[in-house]
Image (cartoon, rainbow, N blue to C red):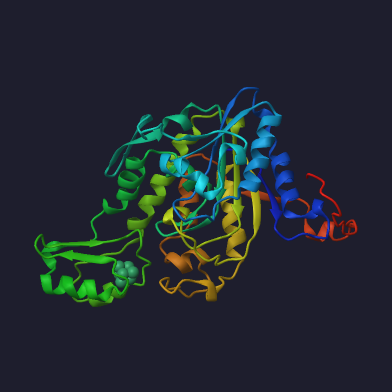
Length: 397
Ligand code: SF4
């Protein structure tokens, strides 16, 4: 692998002066320019993989920026289309995404019935195969356009999650990838009496432990568990329950595997990654309702290296303090200066960097990156902005 650091272009939401050319939209354009879409060939079908939100969840990449990306693809002669899971595409208009507003078609990732797929052998614990969206598979180039946010299962929803979960049809996503965390045993039925199981249920004040006394079966929602370990304190003298790092890391490893398989479909110079670290909510866009922004807006990051763009995004987020008074009361924050903000929200074992370690091992990219800031406030602040222009008559722009 190349030992040179991967380039990550960054535009901060903070403008350096009062000029439009120093503001965020101009920085997004500049990051797109630096990414250099010229390696997209004329008539290439360019999949812009987005998370288009779900039901009342509107904190996705604003259509305002999507249009600019679509325009940039058209300018080099590419044929862009936006893709996501069928339901998100069918009701995308509710959240402002249409062919007219985005400037290109919106196509369901695995066809009309979510069944146009390509199967690959994953052979990973209880997951034998994964079914990739056929439409994503058929594209000539990929723009992985991501809204960055927290994620209850793996800590962080970024570019890897956008194609690892979002690149596959519904059953792969919800049953197989999300199901992998249940493949390692965490409960010993023989050591646990029904009375003790009920104590464990009570120990989890968030209700993530359930017990079926007819089947004598205890289940723990590892996707939501934030590792407060209150249940293990109750279990100390019995030892029927285990909560270990592997219970959570499996999901992250499979995400890296799934994303890697998607990336293999494209030539090296036809993969682009754009992370929008704005409107950073504690949970994923698929929750289907609005959530408070619990970290300051940061900006846009772009790279041709998926691992680098994720690492840079996480590092910039890691410098932020959580806006605690915006945090919903059902999130119990962990303390600890050495924890990343997403670990504080989702638990120390949901360390978002683990996914990057797996991705790097698979050869997907490098965590060694160079951050190149475009139109940096400290630079543009020294340049003079124009005096304010007030529109006195309609300009039709
Ligand atoms: S570790 Fe905490 S959140 Fe997780 S199941 Fe146990 S009590 Fe619930």
